[in-house]
Amino acid sequence: MAVDRRTELSDFLRSRRARLRPGDVGLPERGTRRRVPGLRREELAQLAGVSVAYYTRLEQGHGQNVSDAVLAALGTALRLTPAERDHLRLLVRPVPRRARPVAGPQRVGPACRQLLDALELVPAFVVGRRLDIIGWNGLGRAVFGDFPALPPERRNLAWQVFLDPATRALYVNWEDKAEVTVSLLRQELARIPDDPALTARITELTVQSEEFRRFWARHDIKDKGFGTKQLDHPVVGPLTLTYGTLRVAAEPGQTLVTHHAAPGSSSEAALRALAARATACGAGGLGTGPDVGRGGVAGGRAPGPAGGCGDRGAGGRGGRWLSRSP
Image 1 (cartoon, helix red, strand yellow):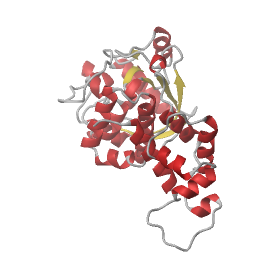
Image 2: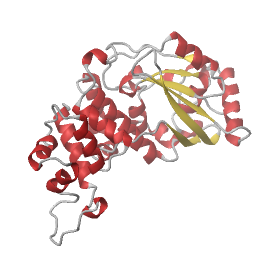
Image 3: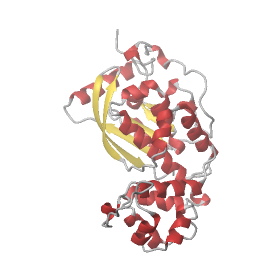
């Protein structure tokens, strides 16, 4: 599936226009029935202070030489969130090639490795280009799944959310997680629209997941750099974790995702139990699997967990987690 930047721009503007009614933006409701939902092009153009012909060309994907003032006016007229405004700007002005992350294998740098290793009671992992999971600590592996047991091409946040039943069962609010994941993937596409491996990943998800197709068609953009995750862990049960994301300054395109439980909570006790079990199973400390390169789409079956501590009956989820003690 080839991804065309002009089509992305066109579809995004159409989808944002379709969600608005005249009354939402202070325009009078007309008596005539509308053939399609949302504002008409001429209404949107009027709100943005541009001609109908200019806006029509923009919505057709001709986004060259759009000024900051016009982008700001369109953002206001379409009632865009800050994240959506940033996305629109990227669709019109993709990141220059010289400023993009260097292509090739993705590696977690020494400073980030040391930080991961120091976060003993904080489940953490590093997400790279295309939402590839390229590094983790022992507790991150214990909470979110045994990453070393997966082939490198399956260590991908979008693949796990949409194509791995075990990960789906982990998230209590799976729909919210899926929505945010698609938003992150779409923003990645806006930043690097001509990455063949990213296009291959989107094609794989489109072909194999009806739910991915449904979310992808919405063109929703979310900014979820922090929040709360409700998990149903197959070993320790319910977990409530606060998460945050940090850009890795030394490695463009990489993000550190950390999670912590409220002090004194049952979730904190559960994390301590998981940390102790991970250490006993030899899974403690930093884990970074083989470098993730350009990669292809997933194939074959994932091997079982390393270290002999896994149990394919654990929680009924295929041995992706370190299991309970007998």
